[in-house]
Amino acid sequence: MLNHLAAAVDSDPRFSGIAHLRASTRYYDAVIDEIDGRRIRVGEHWLTDWASCNYLGFDLEPQIIDSVEGELRRWGTHPSWSRMLGNPALYPRIEERLADLLGAPDTLVLPTITQIHLSVIPILAQQGTLLVDARAHKTIWDGCVHARGLGATLKRFKTLDELASLLATDLPGPVLVCMDGVNSMTGNIPRIGRYLDLCRSHGAVLYVDDAHGFGVIGSRSEEETSPYGTGGDSIVRHFGESYDDVVLVGGFSKAYSSLLAFLAVPTVLKNRLKAAAAPYLYSGPSPTASLATVLAGFDVNAERGDKLRADLYRMSTRVLQHVRGLGVFTPNTDDTPIIELPIALDRDLVEVSELLWRRGLFVTLAPYPGVPRDQVGFRVQVTAANTDAQIDELNAVISELAAAEVFQSARETSAS
Image (cartoon, helix red, strand yellow):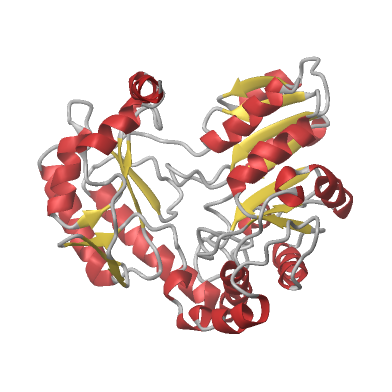
């Protein structure tokens, strides 16, 4: 019976593309035996890591690594209470510092963003309406489908005009508009002020998952070291918006290299979630080491985060300018460190992946249906821990692939 279930998964079109890559490439379930900065060893093969989401390089930062031992001796490896029962003092310290960084009224931290979407979206939606951006991350969609099963109405939109049309209809409330911040594949930054204007004029709440923006983009100012802004305080502050009618979701597992996630919400809603959200009530907490590295990450961010973001921007734009100069298509129009490179429609992703492996690049493959058929390809992520020599090597391989007509030709794109 279990073998039958496994066969059913492999033949399911929702999973077959990924199952094929898992069976046919070396980029799925890779066992990484060793790291050396942004170099990794898989068996006998050394590759440069372009699949890391540790955008600020905090995973390799000695000051952050050294912060762990003292907290481990104080709290043990894992305080096993659910947050409902008891919270090590690390938790309120994190929530207070996070609220201060974000300029938010209050924050609530839970282990992962996936847990947040699955538990919090149904609580917020109740028997109302969910309007979901078609480009939103699958984990948002999963949370919305769960809410639909509990009685909410679920609709998708592709454009601002479609969202406006939906909001203008008679929808059961409350109404929650769900979307990504910095998109995890295109790297683009939605102009959330436009979405907020629509939501506020129709009494809706905007729910934004900025997993890839938190720590990278932030408040704009005359003192900024790059167009990413200052502080890494996420998309709401990046556009100078308030938190009125906004639920901001983010995570520390990307830029802060730590297992923890958060919601920025008013205290009254935070207290409601403390009584209703399953991860707060029942889940084991993040390990002590992650709580310690979050707090140390706040310190490093305050001391030199903007310099790291300047380095990150400079190296990211080196790659993007090279790609654009070759006439190669990438959907990234906002110069973030997430660079998706769709391959030509007549090229095979497995074949391309083998060439990348032989050239020593460890990347994220993007198969259908994870991305639309015309965007199948691979993604590279630049981090502040990469080097200019590694950027040179990456650009050389991109040039080689472009000469072999592996990529799609550049075309017009537009930011949302």
